Length: 591
Ligand code: GLC
Image (cartoon, rainbow, N blue to C red; front, top):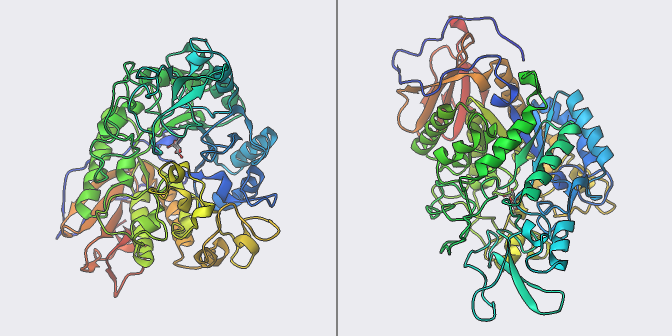
């Protein structure tokens, strides 16, 4: 990371009062994961090398120079394991092999080596809560009778009612419908039920069974030995369930507390049980054993996907001997209101500082409506699970404008940030996919009541003039989900080198973030710009402080005198910062 010479601290304009600092700067030597920008690759949709219309690992490897140029530090790759793809690979049939759809183990080795050659670390996705229904363990569990050790690896229970016709409890699946499915036993009779918090072909494992614990220790080592730098841990808060499995009236929801209507989300007996932390302590010691000298550059990391109602509960996953990071879904779910955004930033920093963990930030991923569309919906509307042709449509222009402003705010914050592939192109959600192409199990299990997540998973556009917008060489330009027309005008080649394009703004921000070490900077709010403006200084101990202003109000805002604009999410109007725009400023004349 480049270093600037120490400079004098930057004075805030006299009209402006600084308020207390919610977050102190970190050392320059902070381990990489405390400040890294990680880029989520959804492998089905990133780049296709073999023309089957589905992205794959060689396609990703070929595009690594693009990611290195973009300026991210690491990749998180969504699952590429052997899978029947009931839930797009989050249903794993073999944790130690690659699905032919994506390539081979040798392709992973090539990818890891090439990524490292570009200075990019690689996190893979670990799915420990459930296997696929096609995993050998589950097949064995079905074939072996009730009470067998094979069944003990999953959560099989007898049904309620005289004939056992009722599920063991009333839990609902996150994807809709019951969380229980009844099996037909070898003799043809209806038998036990098994738990699946997600699809019926994603049976939940029994994490109280030592075989399950040992198996995942081995899976961790398998991939660590191949050179991965860490794991994103799928539904990390779900592994243990309350042993009594009491009834629970609510649907099992994957949402953080800020989404309206989800106040009770995740308080159920299937989430966030105290015992899960012991699992992650053991994992942490395995990861640490790969860095015996404790060299911060060699740290391998764990990042928790845990949708929890409070920052404090989330931070329990990143106590010093547990995981390194947890996704900040509270930030993702915050309404585009200045007060709410400021509050979530303060709460995030405070909660993370309290356990000594880095904060993370994220606005989009493969499970949520892309933020370029989400922010184009009515402010305060609850976060929809997908947008379909018959849904209220987002305002695309407003959404992109806010998305750029929100990202510019996010990338100026201290901590680590996650980007989702395609957001650097300003891609919107595909809001008009025909139902016949949908694949998300949530769409089917809710009988279309929930549109589901396909709209954020559409293959990326690389070249405006090529079939499938350069996604891959499929004969008729077909892609596993059709691309909307607007993706042509947003293709990477249309934006490369174009001043003010979303891609170039991302590149500038990522470069400046590194130059100024914003990831390890301290954050201090500046008051005096009014209630609709978020204004803060990010300063590292001996660097140029960077002032960041995000204007959420309709009155344009004057910039501090003699400030140099480093990057702006949109255009200044007559030198003023208009609504839904973020600017990063330095005051070099004061050096
Ligand atoms: C996580 C994944 C999501 C998946 C679910 C079940 O939330 O991000 O895509 O459907 O877990 O594995």
